[in-house]
Length: 336
View 1 (tube, rainbow, N blue to C red):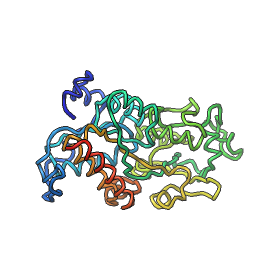
View 2: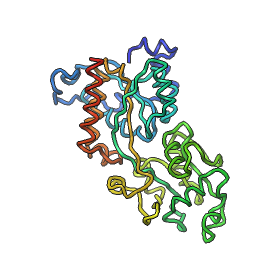
View 3: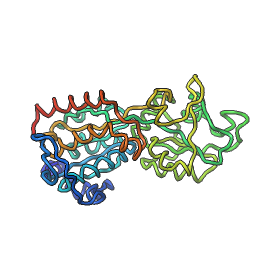
View 4: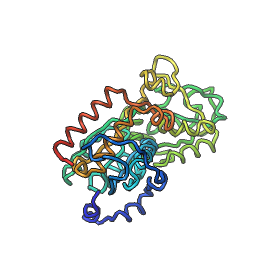
């Protein structure tokens, strides 16, 4: 992103880094170039040819995948400064992407109409790119031996406004102990998705919970309290599964545990969900942004990265090709 665009909104790149806790991916990646050449004329004709900035904000769920892809991209293009921050889907759209301060916004749910309007009012045109599928995971403490599976109705009872306060309110045989809840903040796409499919109304949830944009804090909270429950993206459970327990979900067809396989085959309902990144079409006129967008989509079928390294379901080849076609069409109208 050109410095003048950041300056125009009163935020320098250094201020953006300082105020959002942004990670400079280049520092993590090191400077080892991959000798593999790109296709001629795609704006990325070889290692070290690209330079400039790529700024990314948004979903904490998509963050680990975006980070892994960014590190790989930097290994091929070490002169590109990729900055990545976890702000929540809604927080990223509202405070950064729609203001023209970032090139990409990662999202764990589709962009809302009011967010599109905010983008349009500021001359930003969002292009939606699907990059993976998540199995949103409900977790409890490893000592919570009374529960292995919950129904969607029981989850609603736990999380709805004025719902259950004690575990025994849900099932009489469960402990007569207060439920300690940990979940996503209301700036999060995970919050929007969970409240929509579990409570039945987006944004409607009990106020009696610890809200955070940091999924690791949810893990720590549930790990530290025998009577706690929380929800987050599968990748964060996957990396902490020795510290917490994932619950199976019964949507009417029996208990199904979250996994790559159940998210992929569609049996883990209703908590399987698509993950996205949105790129500003205007930013695609910059070679390094266009190259990163293409690279992200190409990596969306890479099981070694998406599944093995991060913990999500990769795109099918069909979906990847659809996203590349959409991206190429946008680039034809903007450059570079």
